[in-house]
Image (tube, rainbow, N blue to C red):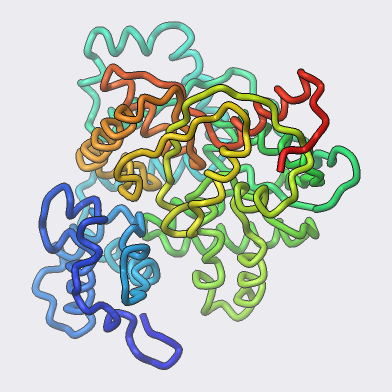
Length: 431
């Protein structure tokens, strides 16, 4: 991994240690090899031909959540995101994984990036919940007979609806349109968090956006890229670029932090593809998290009161990978009745990290417990975030701790506020 000058990005790290207090795995285990600078050292050993253990490289790269807290903390500007993006596929090629692990990974990538398959899976999962089978499985302890990774997957299962109406191909702006945007509906998001997509479309329309929803959009490739499946990630990126280019949208709006992080880096992902390089850069420049776009737009829709103490959780792929931290807080503070509560250690990952909580369930559970304890200390009424994976992870943790709290996506709170304003007949936009 090199700069345009030819200098290796690995040489930017001066091993100062500023990354250590923000690295989740270093906080868990205190092992140098499980810190950013330790992993960079392993990458250097490989580059210089001094590596003595391929398995060590694979293990410590696998254990990295890719949360990018180290990128925020680093005073030297080390591009750990680019270094990790290059290291993941190397680790995946070298990994001698047990058959069970390989089978589980194939299961994940055969389902999660495919909304059509997820819709078929949603039916038995909905019946599993609605017929009381899930409650029975947990009460009898049968769930503990599952392999650890399948237990983790079952624990993260959100409420599943039997009927899920997709968004139409266009949701027209209320009043005069001032922006034409295209909405990423996501894979897991559109099947299990369809309400979030609907709320996003309503809020954008209320703020004067024509919302284009490409019906043929597929996976953005974020899960594949995070897991080192480089070829799969690139193929997904090319398909998504083709689809969204055809919309003619000014902006591509994303309401899932992991997807947004990956899509904003398409230019880097496809940098060696002569056909897509410039197109990927133009695509990435149009990508905005929904909170970024809403802050940039002068508010048109009135905000009504929503009386809640809100613990806002910063998704890592929003605050660290995209640098989006102030915007969600500003949007919440615009809502009458919201009391914003900051979560201690907000820079530390909750353990979700794409599919990390499925592949490394023990570490993810330890981080989840840490996050849940910090959430509980806020005495909030609700947890709000901008990433569905985080919401699933925190919900599971709160339930396991016997401290259940409602969880909401940021746009759901804004949608509720706009609806409240309409109910009381308020017509003055709140600045």
